[in-house]
Image (cartoon, rainbow over all chains, first blue to last red; front, side, top):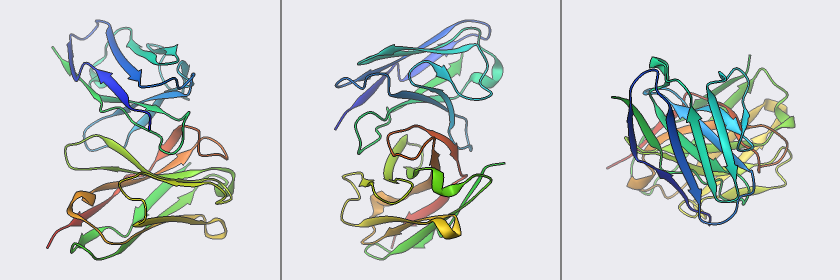
Length: 108
Length: 121
């Protein structure tokens, strides 16, 4: 089973600044990596798939990069609505479709 | 508009069974794989099970293998999760999620609001 490890567990950033979140796979998942955003009391929302393709309706300030085992989600200029928990997920090796443990992005 | 509505959750004693349902609308159900994902209180996301468009590919997390069974009825636009031999550690909010294609090796683009399963005596 592929293990997905996200870092840091919590990231404190000021509004307007850039946030960089990391996700590492225990073995290569090619570009079969997705990012989700989850706000309190809400279901997750797909942000990025294929490591770097924004899902429908996702603002351009969200970008993804990486391939193989190292991936990054960057939010270029944080808005108040971006403070949430972010999860990466691999869907290259199935089952299972493994999620990372999440990174909580909080207001500094 | 895509809608996924889960039902069937509740309070159940350890060792008992529960069947979750997910009613889908707003898209051609039999064109997409479907999944169940759970989230224990205050914890992260855990993929539970997935099923391809024609039920030809089915998979389970090790934590539920042999106890849970996923199925779908394309004529009724519905997804199911039969949960047997429930344990306290199965307590979670269970989400139904739509894949982005026919096969299970795709991300999830729509999620329901979840149904809460509590396993306790």
